[in-house]
Amino acid sequence: MIRPEETQRPYTVTELANEIRRELRPLTALLLKGEVSGMKQGTKGHYSFVIRDGQSLINAFIYADDARRVTTLPEDGQVFIFRGRVDYWTQYGTIRFIVDQVEFDDVGKLRARLEELKRRLEAQGAFAQDRKRGLPFLPLSVAILTSPTGAVIHDLQETIWERYPNMGIVVYPVQVQGANAPMSIARALRRCNLEALADVIVLARGGGSFEEMYAFNTELVARAILESRLPVVTALGHTSDRTVADLVGDAECRTPTEAGARVVPKKSDLLQLLRERQRRLDREIKQRVVRYVERVDRAARELTRLSPVAQVTRREDALRDRARRLDGAAAARVARSAHALDSRRAEQRLERALAEKFAGATRAIAHRRERLTALSPEGVLARGYSITQDAESGAVVVSASSTAPGRQLSIRLARGRLGARVEEVEP
Image (cartoon, rainbow, N blue to C red; front, side, top):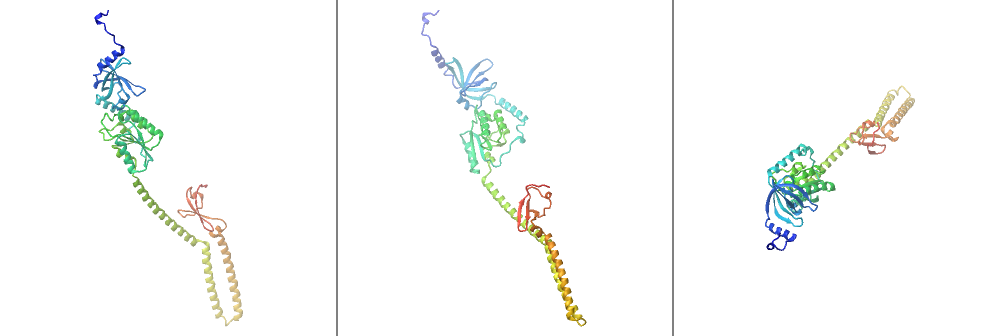
């Protein structure tokens, strides 16, 4: 029974809720240590979970904006130190601890978990050198995965364009720190491979503490790098420890500047190399042409020396010389026997004899010349045949089996030559 002296105006629910909020308002910027349980992400990017110790628990909440700034997202079973404030949610009638910062309570335990992840990945061959992809000699475009703000992206672009002014660069903005960083990096890696706008990926950050670099020590990022079709170069800054991303990546650089120099050669060096190779190629071509002309000249002289027409010409010259000697000998004999013979009759008989002998020799020579001419290369060529030689060695090709597809040939005709290449061989 309510006594009259205790009679007063009753609170409304809202008034009582607001009173509770006013009483809790001083509980701000508190540090709370406990184990995480029931971590869930809402549709708007907020996170709700429970912080507990051995005896009690309190509901906790992280707004999406704060979740993007924290070093790492708490997981069930982990103990953290949370900074935040106590708030009474009047709509639901619940007290919650609103978290705006998360710190590892025991870095030693976190490192132990990291070492366990490294052992597991190493056992699967994720760190093996023979698994890693080679970097392209000259990429058409480079993908950069980093924070869109800060010096890292500027240093990378400046280094790349200084070395190769018209090199293509595609930037994929990612979060490199905070609870959402692992998922942001993994999604960007998959998108980069799907779009295929670049030939190599540079995953970059400007360094940081062990906690700040934690995103690059997660299995989510490691698996995304391993699944990448494109080679991945890590450039995570001067850190005391190699991250898991460094270990599974295809190449590791300490700074963005080093990474830019690693993935892109100097254009001036390439142009100088091309000019030098062009000069060497020109010299080689000239030397080969000179050697080929010399071989052709030698072959032509040899053919001329061995040609039946040349032999016939030499034999004709020998016969003419012999005929002149016979004329001289016959004249001498006539002079010596002139006193015994009637000079006129003897001269007539001798002339007839010489004429008949010379006519017979001339007919024989003409007959042989005709036969030799018909059998000579020039005669054969005149009838529509040709002489085929290997263009490089000068050897006469007499059988299809003595050449091969792709070989260059020189074909001699009755008038002129043809250059040809073997397309097919039928032995």
